[in-house]
Structures are given as structure tokens and as C-alpha cells.
Length: 424
Ligand code: AMP
Ligand code: GLY
Image 1 (cartoon, helix red, strand yellow):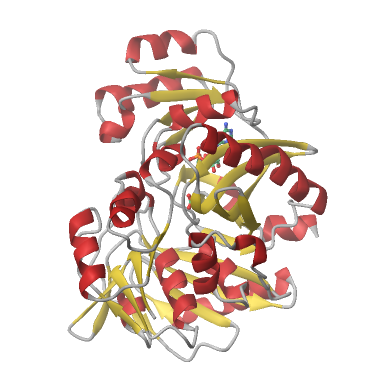
Image 2 (tube, rainbow, N blue to C red):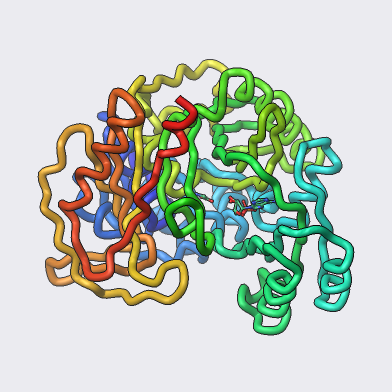
């Protein structure tokens, strides 16, 4: 069968690569893909405007695509799934209505309250004046969030009122996040440890995937600006068996029921970003897609077929699906361009010494292949991912492989996975 994966990041490289390992998969197209997908066997990059639903649909029809997997949030919020379904094309991902859970933080927070899903106290504002007045009443630190999609960068942790005033000025007056900043959410700061809880959901059926933990801040020790994610590992010991059960009962099932009650039954990856402190679990956000970089270490541990998992979800047969995981641990370290998450240069030539071992996998993100050279094309350029019998070994394996890659200005966090060791 032929599959189309939508997107061009490390997540899409990992999803396409995993599908391509199935013998019954003849070809995986990736639109638009990156240098990593281009260099894989059985994978072909396709230049398509992924926000043009008609173009994507036409490609699927002319190429007999039997399954579409949508990676990033923009085409989901843009109704790609609704459109493809209307043309009878099999597609794994939520429809536009359900994708609002990620597309609008106000929608998500109001939904959490309505369906009793634990979350931080908040208020939502569509004008600068009222938001500023609200700052007089709250304690700090506090968190200011642009309402719409901002590639993980629209969240500003404010230590004091001055910082919050600046964040509001940037959002409302300087338009730092464009239309995503037409509204803001101001919410209480939560202490604790984060975890990514990602499941495959089909209406009222759910298969939780292996747990993981991302590292959102740009610098070691979680300092500096928020990014799309600087590295992840799996499993995440902060999600104990007890917490795991409670997340299903108190977060995932009520969310699935609530979405159904709102007329948005869910299909796709459903990702709860959690803050865990002792036995308290709070939802920071929902994403309507797989995490990036969480996908990369999780896919390395998935032993059963991703293609069959997605097909079973589309065909509402998840209850009969047997998912299998490696008992190994995995760790992925993001290699980024100097300056990320702020301005950075692109088109920098990359030197990769190949020959990765069986336990190592280099997933590309912001890369392109031009004139036989691999060049940088984004802020997050690679995710060096590795397996190990223990988390400590997986971390060592990932870091030991990094010197095989080099480009000017390359930087990475040095502490990916360390929190997991503390919990061991
Ligand atoms: P979000 O996009 O809402 O998940 O926020 C991105 C990141 O900002 C999260 O992964 C956390 O690291 C941080 N963050 C968001 N909301 C809060 C909060 N209420 N308290 C503490 N940290 C937060
Ligand atoms: N790694 C966080 C995200 O994908 O939103």
C-alpha cells in the first residue's frame, strides 16, 4: 500500500520511517519532507502546499494513496481531514472541530472547566486594557499565553508584573504572534514535573502510547525561552502506574467524552501536556497531534506496526489492536541552529559522518538536500535518537553519537533525560 505523511519535521521523518519498515508498505510519500526523508529507502518527498486541501486531495486520488497521516497542527486546524474524508480518502487525524482543542487555548481552557478536567486557574482576554488590569489582582510568577497556534513559542512565564506587562505589550501592540495573539490567556503558574501523555484515539477507543518527557526551554536546567522542544526520552518514570491510570480516568476519557458531546468525536493522536506534582495532575495543554520531538524516541521503541495502528484507528478497530513496545529506553537530543528559538541563519552546510549503529537513529527536521549537499533550513535541525538498556545508557548513546554531525552554530542541551535519572 501507499501512504502519504503530511509535514516536514523530525516527527514526520520518524512517522514516515516507521511506516516504511512495514513489508506491506510499498511507498511512503512525505509532503514536503526534508533531507532525511529524501534519503530513506521507500520514502519519496513530494512538493505540495499542505495547507491547500484540494492539492493534497488531488495528489491522493492520482497516486492511489490508501492512508494519509497528518503530522503538524496547521493543516488539522485548517480542515484537511474534513476535506479528505469528504472525498472518501482514508485519513488519520482529527477534524477541524476537534483540532480546536489545540488551535485555541481559550477553547481548550473553557472545555477543561466544562468537563471537569484538572487545569490551572485562568482568565482569557481579547483586549490589552482588561488584561493589564487583571495583572493588578494576581500573584507572580504567572503565565501569559497567546491564544492561537504559535509553534510552542507563544507561552511566556512571567516572574513579575513588569515581565507580564511586557508580554502583553509584545502580543497586543507589537503583534509578536500575529493573529494567534488576538486573545491571550493568563493563568496561574504551576510547579511540578512535566510529562507528555500521548494516545491513539478513535471515538471512544484509546491506546495509550509509551510515556515521554520533553524539554521545552532552550537552555540547560530549563532556563531561557520556550522552544518547540529540545529533546525527549521514553519512558518517563514521573508517570508511575498509578498516575498512568489516573490520567486515563481523569483526563483522557473525560476529554474523549466531552469532545463527543460537543459534536467532535476524535480520531488521531491525542496529546495531553501534564504537570505532575506529588499526586496532583494538571493539564497544561492538549495537542491534536503527536509531539515533536517526543515522536522520535517513542517510534524507536514501537515494535508493532504504526501503519496498522493508524488503520485500526481509522476503521474503529482499536479495541482489538495489540501494540508492542521494546523494553529498551530511548533518548532524543535536538541539534539546533545558533539563535533558535529567535532568529537564526539557514542554508548552512552540514557534515554528517554516516554509519550509525543499530541503536542510533538520526532524525532530520530543518534540513534540505540541494546539489548533493545537506543544508540547514530550520531552527531545529536534527534529533539524534538512541536506544539503551537503561535510561542512562540511552542518554549516553545519544550524546556519544552527536559528534558524527557538525554544522556551524550547532547547539544542543546537555541535560536531556537527567530528570528521569533522578526519578529512577
Ligand atoms: P503550553 O503550550 O500551554 O503547553 O505551554 C508550553 C510550556 O510552557 C509548557 O510545556 C510548560 O513548560 C510551560 N507552561 C505552560 N503553562 C504553564 C503553567 N501554568 N505553569 C508552569 N509552566 C507552564
Ligand atoms: N514537544 C512539544 C510539542 O510537540 O508540542
